[in-house]
Structures are given as C-alpha cells and as structure tokens.
Length: 254
Image (tube, rainbow, N blue to C red; front, side, top):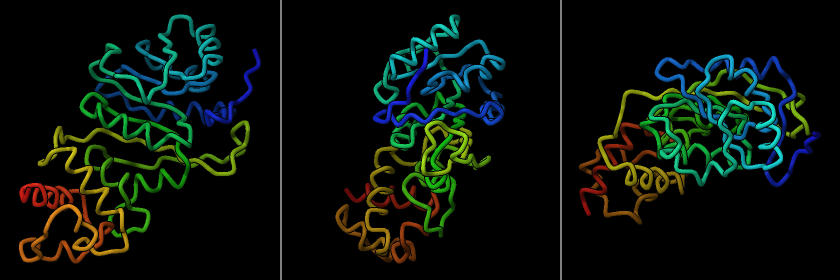
C-alpha cells in the first residue's frame, strides 16, 4: 500500500533508516521499558523500537497509517486517535517513555499535553524543527529562551542530540530538524502550584522586551523592595527557580 503524505497532518516521512535507528538508540530506558510512539506513520522508528522492548503502544491519527502499522506489526497495540485528546492514564502504563518524529505544526502542543503526565513519563526522545529544539534547550539570558524552555526545564533535563537535514524526509520540508532528549528530573512537584507557574511564565514572556515589573502588572501589584532585583530583569534573564519564587510571591498576594 502506497501512502501519500497528508499536508494537513504535517506528515513528512523519514526515509533514512540509519537516522531512524540513531533516534531510537537515543532512548535510555533505565526507569521503564514501556514505550509510547506518537505518530509512527509507516513505522520508520517502530521497526527499531521493537528491538528494544515488547511493551510498546503506537498512537496514530491517520487511519491509512494505522492500517499499515497493524499489518506490519501485528503483535503491537495500535491506537487510532489524536494524541492531544488521549488520556494517557487509560493506556495501562504507570511509567513510560515517549518517542516520535513529531509533526512540526503540533510539536509544542504535544509537549504541553505530555506535561500533564509528567510524573509518569521517564523520558521523551523526539525530532523537532531545529528552531523549536533550540528554544526548548536554551538557557537564561538567551534570545531563544522562552516559555517552552522554562516550563519543560522545570521538570526535565533537556539536551540536543543531533541535527537531521531536510533531505532525509519525503516530502522534503523547507526546514531542518533536531533530535532532542528530555529526561525526567527528580522534582516531582514544584514549590508552587503548576498552574500558577505556567501562568506566571506565560505572562512574563508575553512582553519579553519589558522588565518584569511592567510585564506582570496585570497579575498583581508588585512590591519591588521585597523582590529586590528580580523585577528589574526581563523574563529571559530568570532561571526556573527564580520563576518559582516569583510565582509564589504573586499568588500569595491574592
């Protein structure tokens, strides 16, 4: 069966088997051998994943691909659904790794959905648009450091592994890709409410060129003396721990 990539699903099929194997080899699988693959397509990664574990669940939105996957990998659990709408707690794994060549147009949404299950996920290995990968892994005081960087680094150790040229896909995208690994850190919960933290980070970066004392005005009345130099900084200058401190201050005022 010949599968034509669907533009509306952001499909770009990986056609280089060596790169596919390298992506799968980036899984560490120390804490769990359970693996969920997101958007397996025709199974470019799957054929190598099955060499690492037999506890695998495939989640694919495209029915045509689901049919191919069920035919190729008859012993695997293949779920026809949108990952962004699935309650991962219903799939039977307490701990698991996520892997995938994530569609560029929904890659950030995939990560935000995964954050809802942060205490179940041991690691995430994925291919992203190079620019997005750089944002995820960037550090404070960088122009690329932003909402994704702070929120993901609060719960994961983020590292860029290797770049993948556009020539390794069909159809060939106009951008290059980067494979990254996010390894769950030891922080089970932050010293503030997760929802409050998200709101503070997003509001702080909503006007990233402004100092925080101005960018956060909508949230609360801020006392500069009690926060010393923090409010004189921009969001891109703050570490995760400083955002946690700021979150606690803001929501203790309410």
